[in-house]
Image 1 (cartoon, rainbow, N blue to C red):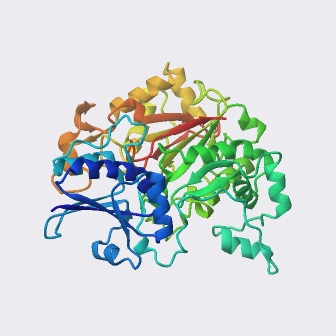
Image 2 (spheres, rainbow, N blue to C red):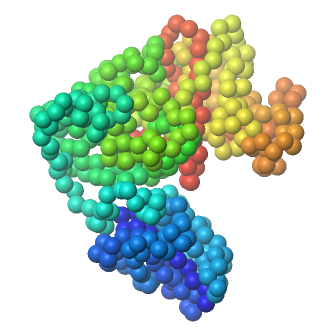
Image 3 (cartoon, one colour):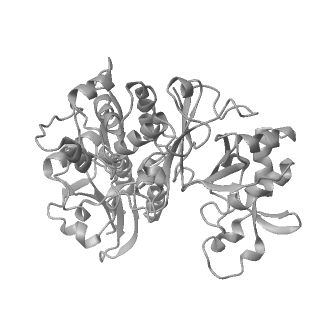
Length: 481
């Protein structure tokens, strides 16, 4: 009889999400096969997992990882369909409604997952426990929200904190007094979010400790707390952003009067080390992603080349110098998972079409020069360029639409060499740009977002390309403050 093995960890959110669907699948098989859950954790947390998720399928635990080593899943949840001779017919990793329904169909059962049941269509999993034998004992399924631990340091506190809690830059030791000042009158145990991929509890107190280490002023907590909520929003998928081999880092764009109230820079050197608010907010977020999320470079964060934005990646829109409406017309933060700025110069164009032609080749290289359709981009237009465009009668929407209509990759570049993007060329939309047959780079104008930022002297703008997008990737999220 065919068997389905469901490998899980008791503290993996994607595994918890999958368990009720697996129970439905087990009930739907009705003699056509059996479902067996394989827990990678000890008996006590496994029992708690079963009770909390209402699992009705058979469960056993794999104390010495014999089964885990045999099948070697890289991530959990992991699903293996085996035939009568225990040969693998199919396997999948992570939570995916589509994969679960395909598995049910292959077993002759009805779909077990509905697209409108309130749960996401997909969610990345966690690294399989048998591949992390050097990690501490796994946490129990239900993790209580507790106060931050206190330690007594006799050695150099700056060196200790840098080595224990920081990145390669020094950090400010988060003393009890400094953290209390950062917390203010807030409840230190207030749970703001659980930070992937470790899904550790980000309480006000723990966020404040990282803010101290980053050198923040207490007022920055007004932005940092909602920023932590935003970065943990399932739509943003910081789990994937943290673990990808791509360049991506969370870019934060700040809008509204709070830019001036807290001292965010929006003019010259906006991507640089120009303002304490920009630098420390971005650094606090990155320390939280490391210390609570666990995404340390070389361990979970496996980016091939990285991104300097992983030290800090915060800009504000220069609303005062923009001729158009702001990206968000109130106090807000927007998150976009992207690579570093691709800057370019255009100092002689006097009309909008001439100027915008300089943007198109840069936009065409987003993700990879011959990949079309799904990538997205953030276009950061300098005030001088924005004013040239506005003087020629272009609104922000018209700029976006012009870039969408005129950004493509020449079909002649797809010469059968098998390079990335060429395999999907048959799915791309054919257009003509200035008499040249092309594939359209972006499926829809909404995939291009425009922000006005930077100094008023110098006609330079930049394009920032996305990581994976859509439901299985990272979506742009905006949180009002």
